[in-house]
Length: 376
Image (tube, rainbow, N blue to C red; front, side, top):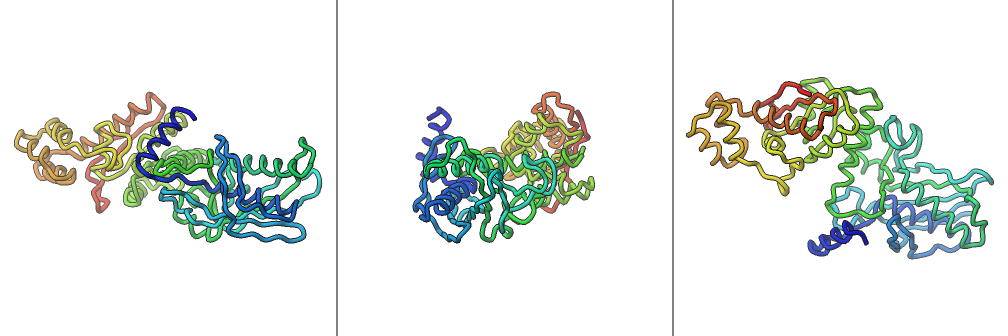
């Protein structure tokens, strides 16, 4: 076990949170069970697979069916204690024999999406089954074939159709429609393990969003903290949907990925209080991991001409929004100061990447309360 894995395990043990399994792991288990039944007539239950880091989880079958030329097995996804929208979904794999020389072919069944835009790690027209789960399934059907005496160097000739019950409905709560994955969910996972509250899936979606925008030729993208800020950006800049990045609290994830995969312009838009955290140097804007620093806001207010009594009021404010309103009433442009300082912090993270950045701060109604000019 690596130091990182050991630390993560200790953290999960300390917090009492239970890890789970990705859709890719579930699809691999279902495929292994189905192909075993196709070759032997019996479904292994539970079915055990080996994940990329060596774990060997066992999965109980929730569905099974066998015909003359196919077998189907289903696994209910257990995401552990992670708030995963696919927790409890039934992931099915149907395996059919193909003519010799066909190799392993993947199909999208009901509830699994199809790639319709470039920029993802799959070609347009391909089922949204990511590369690592595909390789896991290839490896496991080869293992099953060898276990019944097949040539160890031969590639099985099978069609694997992965489906997810109600997957098209579930996918509406994900990034898939914006990324151009239509018709259902993606089959995901690089390790097979879902780490509770790791936020890795969200950050991966941010990265894929940048990839899709670049592939579509977008030169201006926006990292937004929520739906209200997205509407503001569309109103301000007229950006299309595939140029909008659902950044959430992960400002650092957007900036670090854009640093390596630059676009001409990045607009960051979000609530005043959240972006005051970015201005103060925080890259994770979640309330559990960073707080609004009213003392910092008071310092900015002084730079903007606030008197000592006003600065003291700002420092003692209950919320960032209260601090903003106090300054607005006194004619101090605290919103613009936060936006400009947040922009400069973003530029520091970009480390000279050829990206112009501007920042828009909004209130809860979506009205602009501060903005910066673009700078590179």
